[in-house]
Picture 1 (cartoon, rainbow over the protein chains, first blue to last red):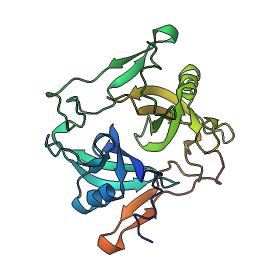
Picture 2 (picture 1 turned 180 degrees about the vertical axis):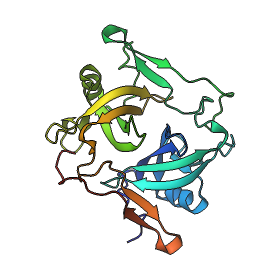
Picture 3 (picture 1 turned 135 degrees about the vertical axis):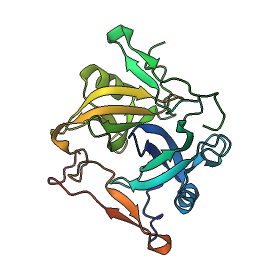
Picture 4 (picture 1 turned 90 degrees about the horizontal axis):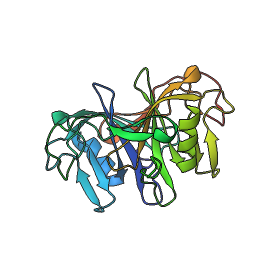
Length: 129
Length: 129
């Protein structure tokens, strides 16, 4: 059985993939992979995801240049989620021009709870991320 | 609009939640949350997920004691994924008795690629994780 067959793809043939900065440990983004995107990611050493909205392979950084060089790929206990250790070239993983997609921090208590953007925009937003 | 309404719940009312060890930065597990589980997590300060297999709220560590004390909750750019910074009480987040669920590392090249379990089992497996 191929290592690709050991992944527990969901009914749409996808699994979530967490991209973590190999240097800082920050979680940069979570995207989806299908079998083909995972195979390409491993063969090329650069992250390729599956865009659910465009229904197409999505080579990270193809237009922005912010590719993700993959240092390590891990699969979880039930085989349905991946974690990639990546080098985030250019230091911008989010299409909003921020370092990471998880820039909204939950702050406050009770009725004052709100999401607050904590990270600066480092460059002009792109469609690509 | 409530902070809970700003989450882009999927058609099943769920979003993936990445639990990251607040001390080590390790990604411990990825599970699902619905609106109620996220509200409880924030109110109680301990992670409660949604079990898709049991179709029920799943208070992490309820039977094992390995609760996750939540230090921070973040939402991504398009609002459909959460990252929690947690203290993993007891140091075991995986139902297999390991520190984290992502113990399968992809090793080898070409035809020799395979998933290799890299992390030791620290205690007897539980159903609860």
